[in-house]
Image (cartoon, rainbow, N blue to C red):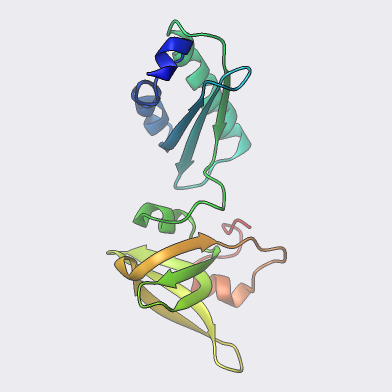
Amino acid sequence: MAERSTGLPSQRQVIELLDGEFARAGFDIEDVVIVASARPPRITVITDGDDGLDLDSIAQLSRVASELLDELDTAAYVLEVTSPGVERPLTTEKHFRRNRGRKVQMALSDGSTMTGRLGETRDATVCLVVRDGARGALTIHEIALDAVAKAVVQVEFSPPNQHELELAGQSGKEARG
């Protein structure tokens, strides 16, 4: 109700207004955050797509969102279109698929943890390329998504091992760091 008194649309209204255009462009709206108390008020649209979100896509989606939101009779606001960021936990099969080739840390429901590079995700199972043993041999573990209690992308500061990327199904050009 607070948004209505500020002249801003509700989260639901923003999603309903933008969802069709974002979907046509190949993107999903992950969340909408409205901060009416900010000066000026802020509407943040968090979006992602199978091929990630580059600056050109952000610019295009921002123009589309701005045009559609301008049709509403709203108070002045700052619009931001952004990606979810690496700190977002991976919670859906789509999140795992979109982060293929990236290094992740997983907490499993049995209490164990694993760190490795995401490979293919299919049929509610994710492949994880892991360094095992004292010699660090690379092996692929298939993990049921319902066995993953939490998974978070790890920030990497050096290029990934080429063989590790190949096992994850990436040539090295697709991986985002």
